[in-house]
Length: 253
Image 1 (cartoon, rainbow, N blue to C red):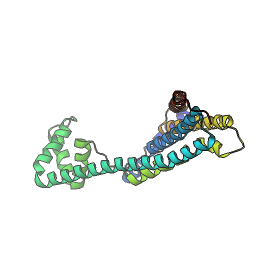
Image 2 (cartoon, rainbow, N blue to C red):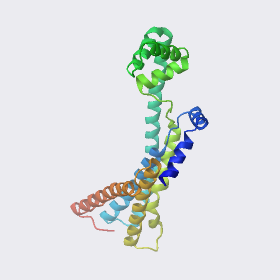
Image 3 (spheres, rainbow, N blue to C red):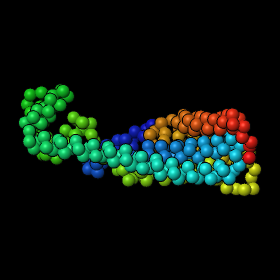
Image 4 (cartoon, rainbow, N blue to C red):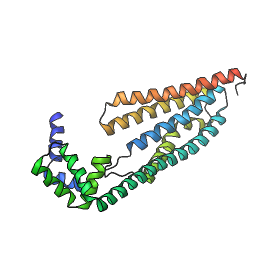
């Protein structure tokens, strides 16, 4: 198994493969948007379900509140993600414009920054000056170097609309799963809640495994960690609703 994996790594580092991969530029992954949306969607709806059961509300209340929260919170989260990525993009654009102006107006100062950056990496004398001359001979490369080395900004720019779309879709798709048993009117409340809990736990574990698979982390540990997080959130919702029902002496529906 290790030998096959090593062969794949060797094949991925053939000169022509490297050239093709680098020419395509860095890819921005959206696994974090999908995981965030999926986990939050499932927690949101199952917390509503748990709270409704804890408060003794009828199944219809869980369905109504669940779907209302599903779409409202999904939209809110997608907008928040969009605004966050939009703000990041605006910040990157402002830094880029600033560096372009510096290169145009004070090129020697910017050359000195390049020189000190690569001097700190261990380059000296003629080799150092050759690197500085090569980089500053092309304004595009010069700008990319300054953005990465001075400000830590990579070429993989955020995509606000894509991030928001992935978050919203994952939120709705995963968040709807714990509500499915409550659509079946033939089941009693205990059966609905038991099936909903099972489905929610399955989704939490699946999301954790999906995340670990994408990031090459241990599947079971990541799945169990995500399941634990969702279980704690649902338990808090159930306990809070139950205690408030007792405090206000609300009769179970």
